[in-house]
Length: 150
Image 1 (cartoon, rainbow, N blue to C red):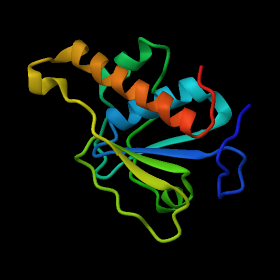
Image 2 (image 1 turned 45 degrees about the vertical axis):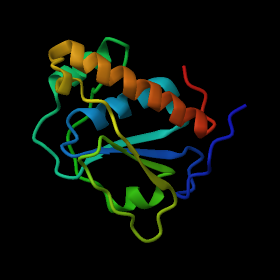
Image 3 (image 1 turned 180 degrees about the vertical axis):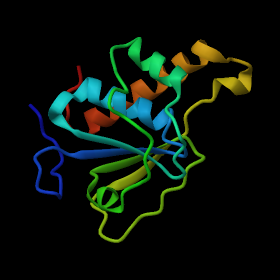
Image 4 (image 1 turned 135 degrees about the vertical axis):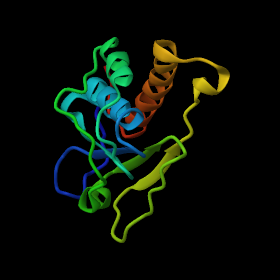
């Protein structure tokens, strides 16, 4: 049974917002994986505190390996109205800072994601490790919202 949190926008789908600094890699990965696992059960968004100019191609390739996609996505800033109505705002990594705004419906949580490059792991292997950790966290998040994942 699907027992989702209500979305304060009036939609029957909870909104999720994934945030990182540039909105080119980790937050895009989390959003793509959430869309993959939840389908239309949630409204998924991503944003950056200081959006970059392009998506990270290694991140894109990594999520495509598991069936997710960045198609149609681009880097974008945080939308205050979306921040207010999101059932959950997830800061992916510890570099970005998101301050609560008045009237927020959901909580802000921070995922301290492992950085394999600190151990000398680079390239595709680095991205797969990051993707797999984010994937596990996305599945846990969806379960906490009562959303069955694929």
